[in-house]
Image 1 (cartoon, rainbow, N blue to C red):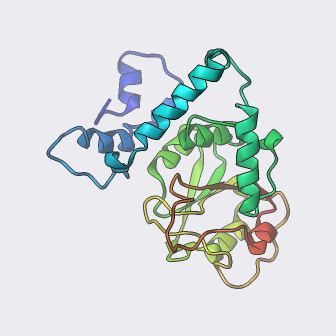
Image 2: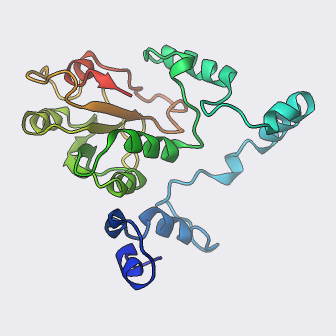
Image 3: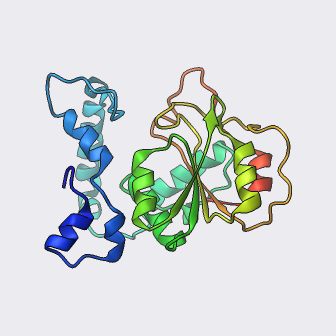
Length: 241
């Protein structure tokens, strides 16, 4: 579908849903196509260096699982995911100041599935979503697929400009505020706890839900500032996921 809007395909051949008229070729897919060319070293897709992959460690982990628990590993399981893993993740999140329990943890195949699930649950056509400018391309594509209305706000070295979010909340009722708290894609910044300065006022509980996403490198920073949930964010957006 590269270079061709889905709307054109729908008109010519298929009877697709009306929302597909908003969909265009995936910018992420086009970026990753370039990485298949051996003469190109692309920094656009955020690909990790393959020589750093823990291949041997993963092979040992898989071998251990198949040796001791192969039947359970290959069997259907609950959609929430392996409970011991959920308990481990919840404990890790609590160390970061997030009130998490295993019963509220859902294992996904990656952040993209998580973004899609949140959008599917929360967004109706025309709902507003506050996003940073610039923002993770694949998140924008997902929100657009659910016919959301995107409201961009600025960002600086401290992450999302919370003062601009405040101004948006005074005139709009967004359903979601999409925040990448650690090592923002594509800027690499981390959200500071007190970003924006003065305290937020006039925001009612339930106005918006903060959708905070961390990156795979969120726990690997060396000497970097780590984000912890700020009382300011809790005041401004009491509901968060």
